[in-house]
Amino acid sequence: MATTRVWCLKGNVQKAIDYICDEEKTEGTYVYSSSASPAVLGMEWSSSNELNNQLGFDAFDHRVGYHFQQSFAPGTVTKEQAMQITQEWIEDISNGQYDYVMALHTDKYYEGLPHYHVHIIVNPKNKVTGKNWDIYYKRDVNKFKDSSDRICASHGLDIIENYKNVSKSYYEWMMSKKGDSYRDIIKKTIETVIPKIYDYDQFKAYLTKLGFEVEDGLGNESEETEFRFSINSTLVQKEYTEENKYLIRVPGTRASKYIKIDIDKQKWTNNNQTYYSDINKGHDYVIYNAEGTVIGGMSGEKLKSYFEDKSELEPDGRKGLRIKAPYSNKFVRCSRLFNEKGDCYSLENVIDMIDKRGQLFSDPKIEAFISSSIDEKEIKSARNNFYEEADIKTKYNQSKFYKMSAREKYIYFRTADMQIRLDKIAVVDIKDNTSLTVNELKDIKKKLIKVINQVNDSIKKTEEEYQELLEMRMESLLVISDEEVDDFIKNNIQPLRQERLNIKKQITDVNKKIKDLEKNMNKGVER
Image (cartoon, rainbow, N blue to C red):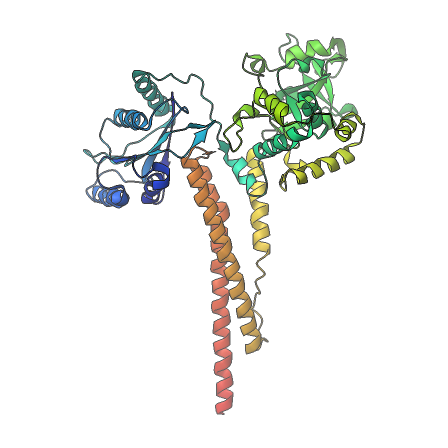
């Protein structure tokens, strides 16, 4: 079985080619080029594209190449088979009309098995016509996948029916620059908790007490009194503020029926378009009409049947261990988390790890903590102490982020981060200050030079992050769009470069003032 990905390349195509052909990743052997040597292929493509443009063919626009990737399930193919299948695939989808270079990466392992994946960089200029290869996501991606499935099947490989990408999101990667991502938090939490507890039930109870939410599909959910539901904001009458409550329409009822939910219990996500709250299954609820007049009643269990998301009740919807970290708004499937050895944190594996690495006897301190009725302040303190023990960094994990959409979080985080960086740059404005001496101006110049060195260091660090972003994207470890790549440059590199330019101008102004003062001083001496 194999999965496929494709995205367009911008900037220097030779850098992308050099990366995929890295000898450490390819063993220096598993590389193939349809034309010239990969070491000069990017330069040749650039020259050819410039010539085609001069001859009147389609403008090349900002694309310098297409990056394809075909990944095989661990242990299903040999290196030679992977190269052969990928070459057949790229020749099929391109009709053999585009130059390309392909490289097999052999440096990844999962659960002790080699995870082979092949990178292909394609020149978007047709070798015959000189026209661009225009790839459209909705039109072409499924065709590429179908071609891959057909070729894999011809080689005796199984087909992945419902593949889900488990790569880290751009927002998650971006947050991890300040602290640990939610996936990292859960991985470190599991590894820290397992040696401290006696059995799986204690594992669940301990995490729950620390503020995590744990679901495993073992039937314990029926014992819970609270049912979490989510609805579109159109079902919420926000104008209704009597008794500090929202009036919420019950979906699926023939006549419009409403219930009242306390405003302070609500949570908003997705740009305030999605509403989250809870229903107590053990309570009876009063039913209202749109005007807030009582028209009847309904049990919590009955309301649950109207509000619950039927998609979550599919056979695979709730199976396995799922954990939600404090301040997070979504669960993480632990079966998609792997330790350094390649073992995943599935429910079965976690139970097995506890059996092998857990305590022989229950820890009295942990039992007392689980059973005690301490307040939220004490629980928060205990969680902070646990985070310190587990080396969990959560500077970004503030409750104010909870109600924000991913895009809002991105803007807030990056704006605040960049402002902190720029605030550290204390530049003296000397434009209107004419009373400064030569020595004072020289001191200011020294400070400005020191500051511009700090800016250069920040630019270097940010450009390294940018390179990391591109490399993780290439390895399918990060899901990021071309627009988000552009946003990273716009919001991170460009402000620093602009600040460097401003400081250079100020240094120029200082030098001019120093020269003018020294010139005037010399004139005075001559007189």
